[in-house]
Amino acid sequence: MSTNFRDAISSSIRYWEPRRLIYNVVLLLVVVASFLASWPASKASLNAELGLSLFVLAVLANVAYCAAYVPDLVLQFSTFRDSWLRWRWALLTLGVLFAAALAYLFTQGIFFPSPGLD
Image (cartoon, rainbow, N blue to C red; front, side):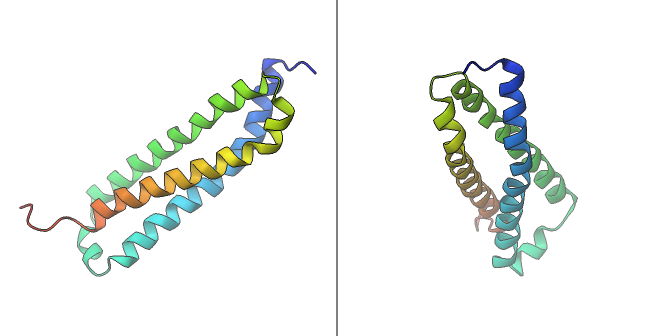
């Protein structure tokens, strides 16, 4: 079966956009857990700069989420389309795990500052 661009992009949007919520919730849980794990030291980092930094990182994380559209669209136009539609959850899982690892590393620098760097 031949796929046109409109059908492929519609399929991608239908798949990826509802799952963006899962992605964002996982990242939020990582940040909150890191904040709570470093309590009470993390309390000292609460300020407007932290809020701005977390906002920028959240936007960048959502821009990075859009990278999933590239392999998704390419594979939808390949002969592997039917298999891909059944297995694209694997890309979602890998992407969420990678983003969670990055979020953890970033929060370690934010909530656990290195001592002696004055």
